Image (cartoon, rainbow, N blue to C red; front, side, top):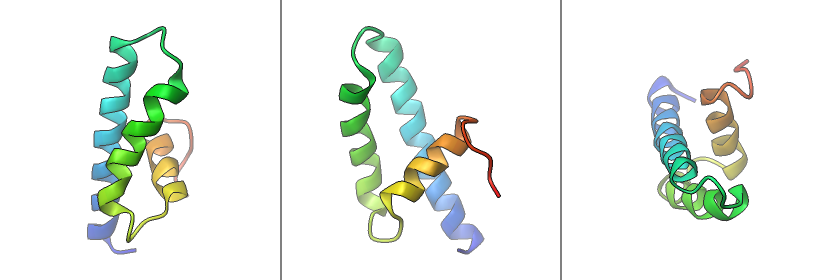
Length: 70
């Protein structure tokens, strides 16, 4: 993966993460699964030909500090 491809993936993951955080802040009592599914699918759709959903989710986790990059 080139640096430009990595930046494109991280940019999409960052936008998704920001939208997830704002949706959770707006609806704190709503179940996370009902909020996150449509948002993640919406942000993954443009980059889906190049990146798997698992890689996209892992990148979001790295941005949020849940996983460490290798």
